[in-house]
Length: 225
Image 1 (cartoon, rainbow, N blue to C red):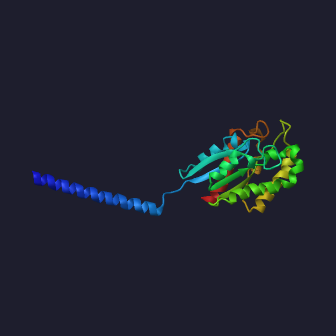
Image 2 (image 1 turned 180 degrees about the horizontal axis):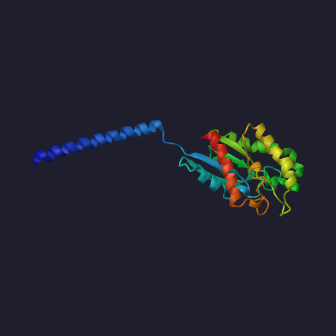
């Protein structure tokens, strides 16, 4: 009986040692191969990003455990550094840089259509380029997309000018994208016929936000996945 017990004990030890060796071997191989890294997506923008469901809808659309998304929207902010609320002066902007995203979606410019900022238009493109270059300078070399924001369908608040936005700022955003060699996602055209999805003329409802997310999703998955 003692011999049998000793024999079983010896077999058990051998199996344990063998199993441990396999675990160590697999762990070493996993380390060499590298575990899949999460693709970090940063949604940069104003209240169209901060206060609408579009970033959440985009995250759902990605539907992949390899993606993690953070909302870096800051309501009321502008591209222009001459306003009272430049995006680049916010804590959110610094947090977005520290996040070191792999994908950056920038949708700004709507608040720059304020009549009080007309006189600073000459620096708009330069400021937009500055913002994009700050992300391009990150050591992990993120992929960046510039979004043409949705149309301004009405000016209920009296604070922003739809005509100036369309005729001046949309071309300026395109110029900034061209100067930084950054691809454009044309949300402006995608939502041109959807004024009913913008109750206040500026901010989308859930349906409008879904179109924004879908347009961005198609663009980034076409080039990134």
